[in-house]
Amino acid sequence: MKRSIRLKFTALFIGLLAAVLLAIWAVNSFFLEQYYIKEKVKILQNAYEQLNQYAVEQAAKGGCVTDQLQSFYSTDGEQTEVSRMLRVMNEQYNTTVVVIDSLNDRTFPAFWDGRLLADLVHQYILGKKAPDTETIISEENYKIEKSYDKHSKSYYLQNWGFLEDNRTIFIMSMPIASIHESVALSNRFMVYVGMAALVIGAVLMYFAGKKITSPILSLAALSERMSELDFDARYTADSQDEIGVLGHSMNTLSEKLKDTIGALKTANNELQQDIEEKIRIDEARKDFIANVSHELKTPIALIQGYAEGLTEGMAEDAESRDYYCEVIMDEAGKMNKMVKQLLTLTALEFGNDRPMMEQFDLTALIQGVLSSAAILLQQKEAVVNFTAKEPVMVWADEFKIEEVVTNYLNNAMNHLDGRREIRIRIQQQENEVTVFVFNTGNHIPEEDLEKLWTKFYKVDKARTREYGGSGIGLSIVKAIMDSHKKACGVRNVEDGVEFWFTLDCSM
Image (cartoon, rainbow, N blue to C red; front, side):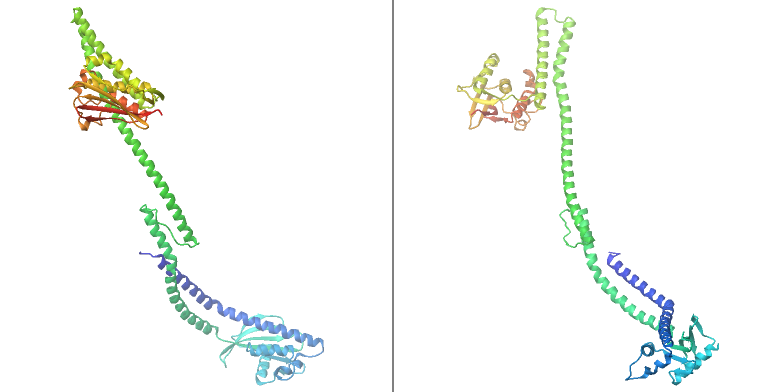
């Protein structure tokens, strides 16, 4: 991974920390001195306010503030409020406060440094100041100045002026360290601490980043598996943060994609089946048109030829004319029969001719069909064997089952050979009846058995033409049995071929 988020987080942390350290250095360098002076000035101002307030109170009583400062150095006497304030200024802020009573020329404290500052304040009053003195605050009764003492080589903040009792002069002197040295020292220390913080923070951030990047890597692996259509992958962490929400959202997305793609596959399969069905129907339509054209071509040609012969006077005698007319009528009958069969088959295949279920005697139906075909059977010199006498009650469409039996019987008559025997039998089981129609003759090739139910299919087209067969009869039988949701079939048996179909028996 060329650009790891883990490394980016670490670099971002180092950059932010370095920026913070740089900002602190800049603030120290440019603003610390001003802040330091400002805070010291506040201390001197507060000291002046307290001292001035006390002096005003003493003047109102007819006294002087210096009278109350004797307890400053006392260890056993009770200290006054002003003496406590001066002690705090001296001990906590290293500030020397000198108070001078101008009426009786009394100075407190009277030590040498007090007298030194008293002389200094008199010089200030007279306007004598060092050339590098900087006035910070100038009020009516006091001034706060920053001055440099060349003897001690130090800077001082001095607050001097008059108290409002009109008799007391004061001066406060507070030494201040070189702020530039302090800033340099602070910045140097900050650099050391900052470098240590950068190193330690970078290491901690690098290892802590694993906690952030690990779930992200898990999500990346999850998305990669999803891109490969592996929707069983799941985000298993139980965190409630943004990454956890994203992981659970990806789980939901994976589940929805799985369902959606499954539905799309189902729809695609159905569409593929529809396309295949359309192709099959188109091919069947082409075959149907070709077969119908082929079947109609011969009778139309015969009708046309014999009709032209009659027109041109080729049949002058009555016998020839009768023969020509018989051929035309015979071929027209074949065409009419084929058209009727096609209409019947189309109605059955499209569900427009549904069976009317009723109860009837199957034995009587078969006997009726044999009686109707007695003359044809005699012409074919067929020997029919049907010995059933007892009624066999079934549920079906009597008219359509009669057509099935008739087609089977006609098919048997047209393919008789050898002993020229047709044998019909009924086999009754518990809830079903099977009718078998056998005829002696040649076996049907095994590869053609399943094709017999296809429209216009003929095993021997030359012999089929002899009796006018179109190859539709067995297709009608299959369509009728499908509409009854029952089975039909054919098999080669000893000495011939046997067709069969099943029906529901009436209990």
